Length: 193
Picture 1 (cartoon, one colour):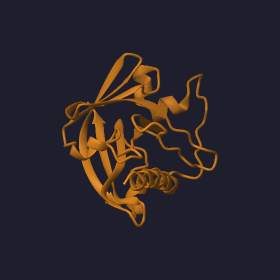
Picture 2: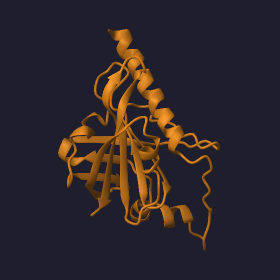
Picture 3: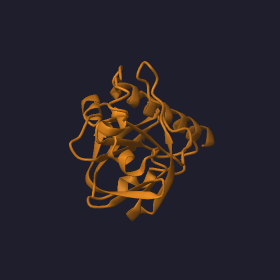
């Protein structure tokens, strides 16, 4: 039993890596300056404009979930790393007005991880992102489950938005022991209030 859960957790992590590899553009170009200001901060991250720092904590208020964050690295070839710590939320903000938060559904041993409760979030739930002692609130506007095999649906969330948006992603659906992965992804969108 322990071997199966260990294997299932490893394959969950590998599946998340594979999804990220499918949906991240192979080339990320961001100009580095504009009149002394970082264009990445001006155009891509309203959160950073408010807090002057990267996210430090994420709270799913109605679900009682609160977690520290870790920045996810993107290699020159466009590969995105997954969170190393199953209790932390990984983040990246390479899209204008779209802070993407990635968390594991379960641990290697099969126990719940940071985004296990994401399946229970509902429209109008509040998500708070904190940095530099400033908390920014977002209201859930949409939750959907997409098939892990639906690369078009997954790619559609990695984009710019008009409004300051959070995109949360984790595994969902049913664990397939033959393929060693979950068959769905839970995607939550929230807008700043």
